[in-house]
Image 1: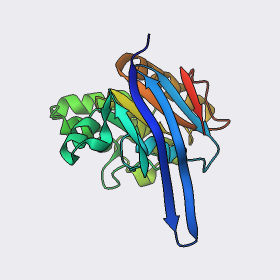
Image 2: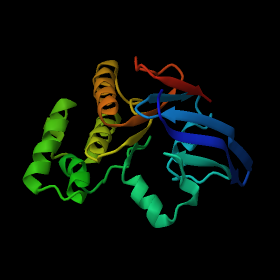
Image 3: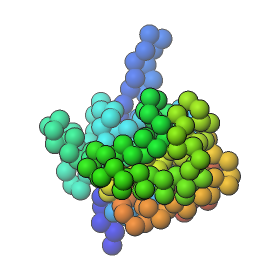
Length: 217
């Protein structure tokens, strides 16, 4: 029997703007097992990104609870939550690359934080860039890359952070079919080897990923 890793209980989230309010999540509940590849699938605007951001409290729900290994994240102090997040990797829709740093420096950044020696982290970063076909872009800056290239950089940067739990918000939305297939293969290997993955995907863009469970919004 698969061990429950993350539980979401009756999450609700409403955003208020000048022209009214938007109910992004209404009583959402789900359970994710340890080591599972879990798909969150839905149309644009259905609340997929809000849900995945609530899973590590980058967005705090109005009500409900999020439990990681049976522990309520909502009851943690800021320092306790910061420590839990060190084991949670995330790819955002908008990549969040460091614009003033090169591709190589972006990929090296999490390795530097972990205290990996400079030579070792550069070798690791170049190995990953080669794997996704971007070795020739090592000295380029994010603004010089296409959306798909930036997405691949964000992906391998996440792989440099040791994570038990990976949250991927539309991780292949900017990729062509060939690069999406390469990334899907790397992603599945990483999740199966090291942790649990939640993949947010729009309807019609599943890229042949074999999910253990799928939740539709």
